[in-house]
Image: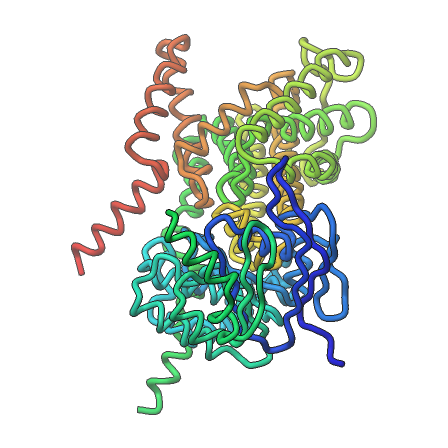
Length: 251
Length: 333
């Protein structure tokens, strides 16, 4: 049996009396395109924070490939191939996209600690950064400060930064948050076009997008996994309907 | 037609090469730094003090301007360098160049030791920690008067002529030449450093320290490294002061010195290498001129200048000049 790209076993996390993750077991096979859905406050972003090491779980284990990564630092997880993007832009406003992505490539090579050679000497890193930006349609605007880019371009830069780490597993936290609907489709086309060996888990609220791009869907409610299955199964699942439709009826 | 794609592929390289290019204005500036020898031979002592302060401000710029570490206790490393050079010259040996290296190494070791604390904090906590460490060292030097001379200052600092040839004379010829060469060499190192991948990583830390781990960056290791390098550079400046003036007073460790260098850097402009140098020139020359008129009001004018500059020119005087230059070029184009 091939090992999963990413797996969690019994992840628990609480803030005081508030349970934000409870007994979460996930298994993402290599090359998966999974969607993580659920109402606000279901613990979706918390789960990504736990998996990427930005939060420490109270209990449970996390595996990347066949290695346990539960206790290691966030930056080391990235080095091992686990990358994420952020729901609200977490970019480098004063750097140009080319500089930012080149930085991420240099960090991956371990060159970012070197201070005796000038940046232009790292031609391969610069070329790779430019290629990544080009693949997301950012080549023309990669020389301006990031803060001057259009919002949609900044969302793409989020993904470019994650790709520069050469991830095996990519966790996208609402990649299209705040992007107009027609542009968000283009963004997901770019995501769908990622190399097939990259395992992707994305959080998304737009059900059209979820059903179009996800091969499987995980539904979270109240810090627990409520259901997991193919889009057809999820669409037919009574409990899922209850959560989404029921809330609407009462709210 | 075949050249068009090649030119496009080269564009990112040209853009990054343009950022690290030596500009004619830089060459002009360093050539102009020789002018005091010819034009103001009676002000060479002051010029030497300016160069030393500029070096100190440059070291602060590396951590504040590039890595975003605010320090209110940077004089700790300046003072350590000064006392190390002064005390060693009294008891051990008095050759200035080797003293400079040893003093800088001692300051660097202290910088490395404290960097483990520094790398864990940001913002207000960092300001308070650096302030506290600075005060701590100042008081330690004050009470260890058997070693430092306490409030009376260190007496009996004697330095051999530079390269066994050039005496540290009253006019400051040797002092200025020496300080200027050390400043220039340290500047070349700083310039190389900020244009390297490490320099880019520092700017990343300044722009968004939270994102850095998410691109696999060991943010704290970067901070520890630059803090140590800045401490070495500040130690160099302090040792230069001790050697060129043959005195070390408790003032080298004072809060006032930490605050002054911060003011100098912010007036000049942070994160642009020349900001601290320009700030040091303006500040030291103005203080020299004003203090002749009415010394007690000196900080009144500095306070006023600081408020006006920070309100109107958020990137300092150099940032304002750069903006002026850019709009002038746009107008000409």
